[in-house]
Image (tube, rainbow, N blue to C red; front, side, top):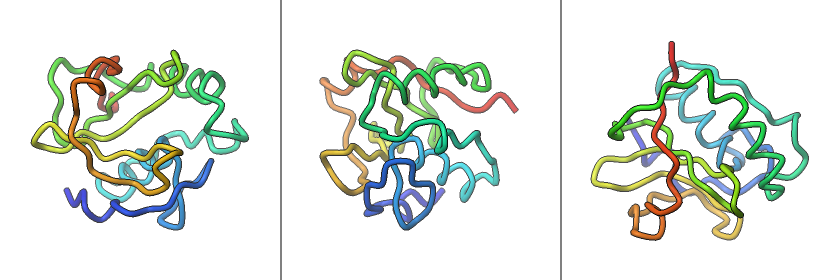
Length: 129
């Protein structure tokens, strides 16, 4: 897996390409490019990824297409709370790091999973199929 290929992508609400992504868009793009898996997009279902309640509800509603795993594997999806909602996702990178993008950061990055980040994690997931 080439995690670095996805570093430095700009923030774009509803983005699903190398031109721009939101947090779920980054997961969507990573799975398409690295695994050949096309996930449900959700891009048309919300107008602002900063609306954590709405965006999180959509992603969380689709969780039945995923299988929760006990320990993270490289490339597994990390589901996290944001604004009190299950509304942020990232991708597990070996060495207790994650590939993710948050609105305030502006660019996708690989960051350590800190104590504060661990407190927000709801689980690790991979697609069922």
